[in-house]
Length: 292
Image (tube, rainbow, N blue to C red):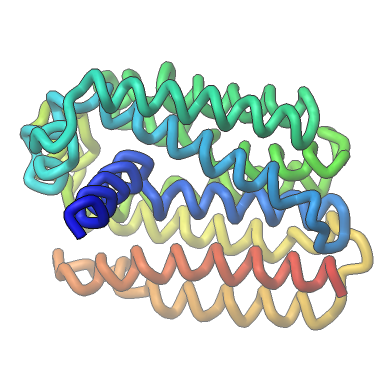
């Protein structure tokens, strides 16, 4: 019983260090890229997808290690494993390195060197470029959004797809643009904490109402890109166009309160949930259309 409880506690820490929900989304976008490239479900996609999940978890754990001092200064992050003292910085670093190594080996053995290269570029860009850049400029999210565009490319190349395929490029662009309103919604909710921790933020330069309107504009751009994705695809059905249109209209209607934002917490919570649901619906529609 005691061992089971200890294992459960250790597993919770590992999942928290690996940012389970974010790593799962990375894993799912990789799977989507694989399906869109191959056109069917195949057991051979399992190992590369798992490998990317492990790699993403390692990158997330390394980010916990890198930002441990600033995490202590924010209420939102002060209870994370490292700043709360539930795990030592050296153990967090060791776990991160181990996960990155295991994920890299598994990705290479289960796919190809191109997929591995994209996986490693994602880790380097997140931990060596975006993470330190966040401390220097409030616009770090824009180059940082490249991180979201790469996982579908990993799945695509793992399935044997070519890098210059227009369909892959538009999917990558969609994920790139989606990252920006996703982050700015977090900024609207936790901007004060970011400022107290010493991060340069847009909230120190613009009002919440202005940032909310910026965010809606990026949501609109995301929706427009999603609507033109089928133009670059193969055998896209009219049902797909209709589905993407209905999903897009739902998101725009659900996000319209951002145009008249009054710093209502529920508005931010709902907008953040909606934009996450939206990307899942879009990728589900694309992959189902590709399989059928």
